[in-house]
Length: 364
Image (cartoon, rainbow, N blue to C red; front, side, top):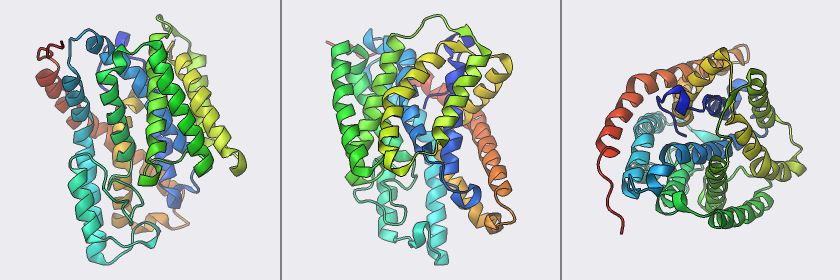
């Protein structure tokens, strides 16, 4: 998930809006006690994130990598530093939450209690942005920060992109897409949907999700329409289609087919279409706001939800929901925007000056 301040000419504003809306749908998925049952297909927003990342990183770094103006090492440093500061905040918040729950003798997810040894192990590996060697029993994931599984997978894809992907031929990209597509079909059949990748036995599914969608995003960037045009109505239609897909009530028996169709066709078509559209001024303002907040929303929302339940346990009372949930989502988005503007963006400017402005290593 790539955000940052760039000139209007270099930004794909509508893509910011798509990313921001998908992030909000992810919050809803993890706030069922506040907002009702998770929307059936909201997890497919993660695959959209991967597709958008492939497109945006090809735009931001593709030429520099392929021409040797930055080295793969510089690129990976930039990517790690782009993701790590807000991830570190989320890791601190969620670790403090689990310590609090352990000391209070209270259960966490699915009435599981915090196991200190697992917490320490997951914290030690998580500090290095690495998955725990065992699936954590009290949150059923590989990272204390639950969404970090997808960030780790994306960093793996970023490494492949830096080493070869930026210079890959169409045939080579096609091979990666074909292998990933086969693994996605296997995963969809095994798990009856594509909501997989955050536990060890699902790791292949997570890697297939990121490599297919990231590769599709970089491929679409190569063949994008070069001159975006203002189409306010079409921009709203793109955002509406996204919300419809993420909320679509797919029958359980057909979910695996629906998920594959979305990942293979709907997201690529939506990206190709949206990347050529400039929304109207009002839509652009909203899309820009959501895009700025989107990464922080994604990485911070689970610890913020956890702490909200500790600080204000009454928010789950039937007479309070879903209004308390809507208010909390609004607060999370606002906090995320503020943290990004006042903390993360200034840090990113410093990091870019120190890393990307250095001469690239000579590649022989």
